[in-house]
Amino acid sequence: MERHVRLQDHADASLTAWVSMSESQQKQKSGGGSGGESTGSAEGGKKLAKKGEALKEEMDALMDEIDEVLEENAEEFVKNYVQRGGE
Amino acid sequence: MAIPKVMGTEIEYGITVKNDRDFDPISSCVLLVNAYREERAAKILWDYDQENPLADARGFQVDGEKYTPNQQENIARNKTLENGARYYVDHAHPEYSCPEVTNPRDLVIHEKAGERIVEISRREACALLPEGMQMLIHKNNSDHKGNSYGSHENYLMDRRTSFKQIVEHLMPFFVSRQVYAGAGKVGSENRAQRCDYQLSQRADFFETEVALDTMVKRPIINTRDEPHADREKYRRLHVIVGDANMSEYTIWLRQGTTALVLSMIEDGAIGRDLSLRDPVRAIKEVSHDPGLGCTVELQNGKRLTAVQLQAEYLELAKRYATGRQLEPWAAEILQEWERVLSALERDPLELADRIDWIAKRVMIESFMQRKGVDWDSPQVQMLDLQYHDLRPEKGLYYLLERQGQVRRMVTDAEIARAVTEPPEDTRAYFRGHCLKRYGDQVFGVNWDSISFGIGDEPIKRVLMAEPLKGSKAHVADLLLRSKDAAELVKNLRA
Image (cartoon, rainbow over all chains, first blue to last red; front, side, top):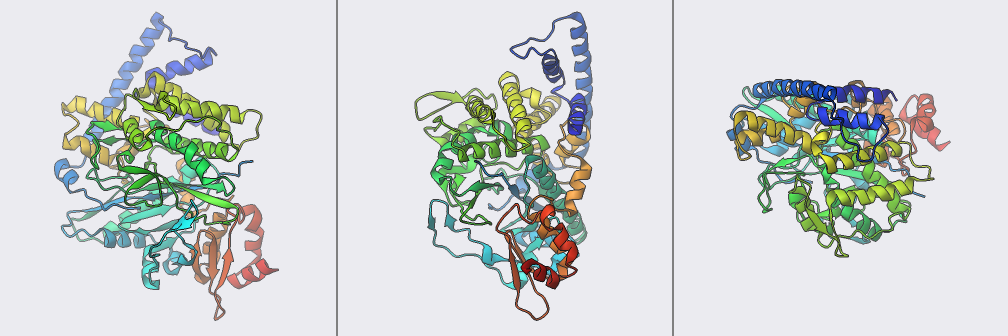
């Protein structure tokens, strides 16, 4: 049970799945399930736009951090990355 | 009735040393594994007497030389850890075999503890390298140049289930489960058809349906018959088809669905023929199709997508679960399996926070968009590689985790505990605690045995043929009563 609560917390912070996931959660809550479509209300639209913004911000933050940590000399690194077959 | 699905994984990691012109993987592996300091592990042998990798599940013994290192080499290459795991050098890769667990969630905890242990030893090993050099470890399965190394899953099965049944019902499941179990890969290799991105790290490497080999002509189903338990009662299904996953959810779902399908096979609950016309071809076609639209042909001429194939298994599993007392973890697996399959049908992007190949793809595509580069860019290949990097500050999966963008299944505290503590409900508990309590007197270890060197007496080997015996409930009191190994052996005989 405790784990479930945690999962929800993380789901809220998730990135690309943001929009569609919160939709599907709503669907579950409303108990419909079979082929329910997302609400087209103005409020819903506003919510989505807001989430879209949040999403873009999160993605930007992620890309900035990737720029910082991505291995320098990627070309050389990738070229030199050779492993022996295993198992 | 199906037997409890005791399980474990063995992960071979990629290893490299930056700025080392004479990089030698084997000596680097030895350095790495020995850099992990658990005092008691330093002098314990791995017991090769108990190994038989050349026994074939189809009922014969393959000719070949069994590898047995000398004592010094044995100790240098093998570490049995207090958490019940084996950490060792396998050919040219460091390998971590987690202790036996009883459920997918514990499996996640212990596989993740393995990542921590390898990372701890990597840091220690780096301190021993000449200045300017740095050891890097990747939890992946290929170098993108045609070399692959494995991440294997093990499941305890009932010996009475015929191997033929297992092969028949598992093959279509393995071909299709990559839609949620794939770790994702940029490009293709091993003479497979060109592609930008594919679901699986491993699919390009499978060349045959069923065989004993793991290193050449890799089979989708491996026949190694080495139960590491009572051979009359059990088999250990050695699954080599999977990817090394980073996502906790992916690991959890992969283990749970597979264990469930194996239970169904034991109970004869797959009464539908889903056999594929050409599984070796199909596994590649499915992997090369991130759009998930391609269909594969069944023996009966029908064509299904991989997601539809999985949905067939799910439906059978739901029917199987009805009115049956399944293992406690199964209900949640069923629920999430269904959720994942319907999301895959609808829009795979919904799963970008939990399925490895999707999380990786979304990250790479965002990067490509921002930088205006394409799939052939070395930076894109670097992203793919770095997703699996074990350095917490550099690994891109860990970056996603830090930013709260991937769904956790377990806590950091649980993982940290599993670095030193064995699971409590399998024989790993006995193994781990024997090392903790009587480490100086432990002579050798294997999965199903532990032997003690007590003074000048002959070596005493304790056999553990039952994976579920030796749990805390069984032996905590015994261990408490035995202040040294001599007493333990005496009490065991009493």
